[in-house]
Picture 1 (cartoon, rainbow, N blue to C red):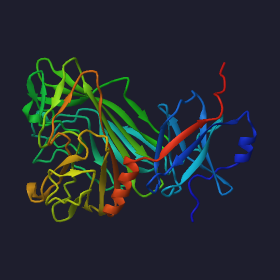
Picture 2: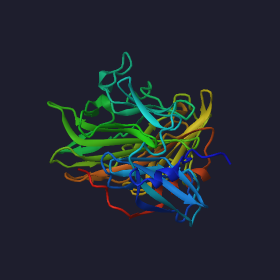
Picture 3: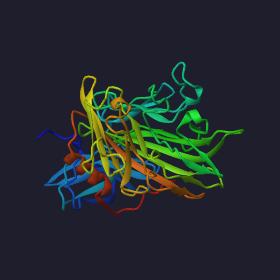
Picture 4: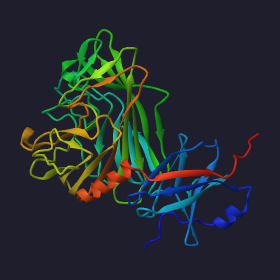
Length: 419
């Protein structure tokens, strides 16, 4: 078996010197009913300012260390060694004044760089996605109403194949991956934040102290506030959205990232996201390379483009031929999302000359009223891949995401006093 990424060097020396290291807590991970493979673990923890932590596991007389990242009052790591169903694993959480968790691997760490009016998130040397923060102009000759920001394009497979499309001539308002609310009611009027040509509503990323970019050994990404704006005289925000995208480091050949959208009313006025066949959740316009002969959709219920539209699903796979090979993406819907399992809006295979549009549409069969003072979250995990994804693998990934491993934390020492 190849050596894992997390060999711990000179652990005895580090732990033997209490001035440099101290066990803060013992953490136990229980797999529960499901096998755990490269599982992502995120737990709340009171992070001590200016302190680094290490995560050390002792099994079969050997000590190993998983990469650990602390921030936003969370501890995050990936279990690089499988944990079968019904088993558990224990770790020592060690406070140290040296380094970061096992150092940063340039092959696995997640970074970002600013480009083309937004930022590209990379895992090692592989690009995961690009988020457009600035307002993008539509193609030459298109209506200026199609100016918009706040979307992901491109999204790539691990080897760099493009999965998304923007501004196709048949639908200039289709923008890679985005959160399109179509039929809403605000202050007694119907507002459409998606069909931009109506000049009814739009979405604009804004400057906010909540905006955040992060790079790290285990994860990186961004948090961006976007306003869903009613166009008028003057324009007015009806909803604010905090979009968080988290890309995780590698131990496998997939590219894994979370797409978390949190909505709230922007004023004292409520808004209702009306029942409508399109809208909201997670929408994707697939690459122009895909058509009804070289691509396929598979839902968690075994539906395809022939019969998936209007059905309910926990996940869907969209995959097929791409320039330079095959690839696709799996989208997992959190079971705590509104109206889960959520309805799908899928273009049937004979529509739009076989082009691909797929949408988790939570209000397809049910309205969603939002009231001031409350927050409303929609959470999805995206797994991009080269080659093909099987339904069996997709179901295993969904179970790991939807029913995370149980984690308990036992504190064994108090924080070091700081003068």
